[in-house]
Amino acid sequence: MTRIVLLNKPFGVLSQFTGDATQRTLAECGLPADVYAAGRLDADSEGLLLLTDDGQLQQQLANPRHKQAKTYCVQVEREPDEAALAQLRRGLDLGDFVTRPCEALRIDEPDWLWPRDPPVRFRKSVPTSWIEIRLTEGKNRQVRRMTAKVGFPTLRLIRVAIGEWRVEGLAPGEWREVGLDKSPSATRSRRG
Image (cartoon, rainbow, N blue to C red; front, side, top):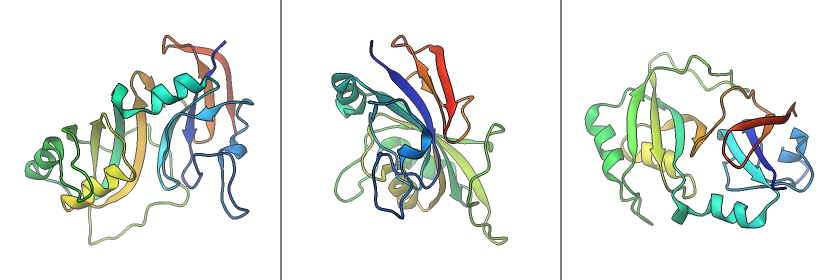
């Protein structure tokens, strides 16, 4: 039986099970044996990471050709205007590639948000705001590069959904198994 695990990857943890002695890895989360990440999140990003024991499903979930929409809540410096959001939506030339069109909108700070450890730096003179970005690709540090390109550097990046799978109800380091039909089966849930 194929296992699919939803993990709320904490800030500072690599999306792999091994690293050098100074790095935090998925091994600290107490995940089931024989599951592997289907995609990645940078160590300085948080939120939903899918893991599975099915190599074919892992490749399908990670492959941008299958266009699984990924949704991010992004805290940025300053307050982007509609022109900046329109640039994000149209797609951007980041030098080594041009991003596909995506969805981008201003949102309030999420009320379900957990505190980050360490906290995001606070500067009295520079306000922050939140954007929701939904895209169907996921190149290295893409969301951070996109917000920086339009003049609003990312301070905090949280992936909240991949397709129909959502991080809701999982604290950082917690995970749960779900069925292939994308609905929670709640067969097991654990805090790492």
